[in-house]
Length: 215
Ligand SMILES: [Ca+2]
Ligand SMILES: [Ca+2]
Image (tube, rainbow, N blue to C red; front, side, top):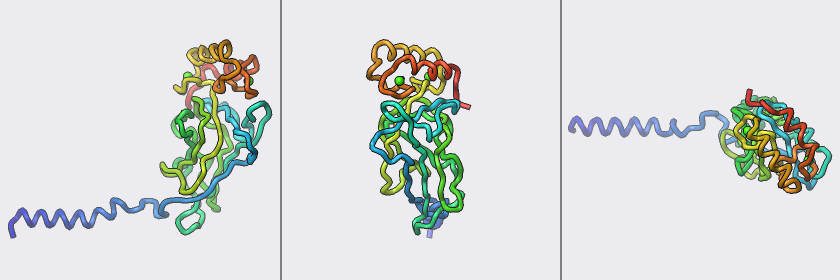
């Protein structure tokens, strides 16, 4: 046997040994599964007002389309392949994403409020750190993937960070002004005090957020 064929065989055996490890599940729990739901179970699509500095609304103060509030708190039960709850799963690896990427999160800005508890449960209740706007469906993402067989949630977002660059400044105020004067009856993105119309009641949330940025 030549020296080179010896090296080739050695490399082959080494790969045979290492490859399964490279593809092995590093969490030890298999692909997480689970289920989640929103507290509000009605037919309307709720909207959550978000600001990059976290001064937006908590989930229990989400808006109905034409005035009034409802509770959009999201509860997730995380389970392993054996349907046993996964306790103490890190909140950093569980987050929300809008399907059109219109919701723009600060770093870690849409993660769950806490690690899963002993029963495998965590929630989204406190305000997000995010900007942008979205009326598309929203997914719960765990370890970078959606959960098997989990349906997306109907939750919209708007923010005084209208252009989604995670700073609220004069650029956003200019967009708001245009919506106010030209698209007052159609612009979801600037309808912060949600009632289907952009008017003077939407100005205070815009003005109060000037200067807001990610933590
Ligand atoms: Ca902005
Ligand atoms: Ca309004």
